[in-house]
Length: 285
Image (cartoon, rainbow, N blue to C red; front, side, top):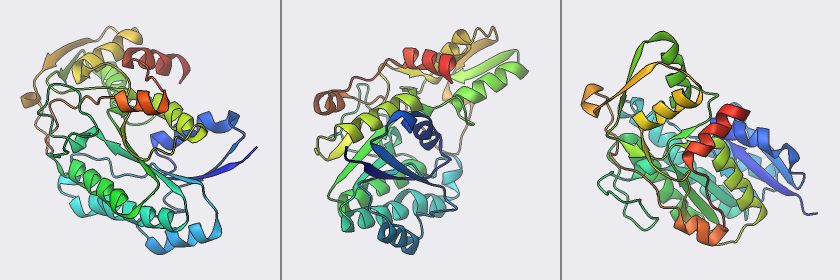
């Protein structure tokens, strides 16, 4: 059986950790996980060197600057990682006949719609993080011929310092939690995204382009937090508040639900509902 060799950048990210957990049973894949220490994707020479030493079929870029608020004051660093470095990868992949799978975000949209965003909707990011991720997409479109840009949303694993973990931590120290209810999106389990990526690798339709992937359904951060507590049988009181209650440096889209019709049609892959995915996180991880 043909053994596909796959470079994964950003090892140590919640997505790469999920990949490492789930690929053990996939004997037809040969994954090469690289941490920033072993491959700094902002270093173009380092990328060229590793591609000269290895013949990769795919590169999954999980490396990203994800500190949404901090990006407002660290814009150059965010741009270097989320855009310039992606260009380095796209060029290397193109020169070495390697398919690039780049992870992007719902935050490339402004949140002014009230129906799910499709891949043909015009991005209009409203914070620095979103602008750098959009710039990264542009680098892929400019330099890569074989690519999949996968936009996802509200990614969580329950194992890192993510929203899920923060809600659990806060519930141990506070009697009442206040969570915003006027930002609507779709919580997405990192394991659901990983299942989709593994399906892509196994059944690559060679229909390159931009795709949206998240779990199904929609929720506010308040509704997400409420289910986290409910499914963990935690009785801490939780109340909804508006975004005005918590002023943040970066503005967030008010609505960033993604339409998954294209993924369902091209990949024949139906995402799980976010509530069911959350239950699996709690049960298995």
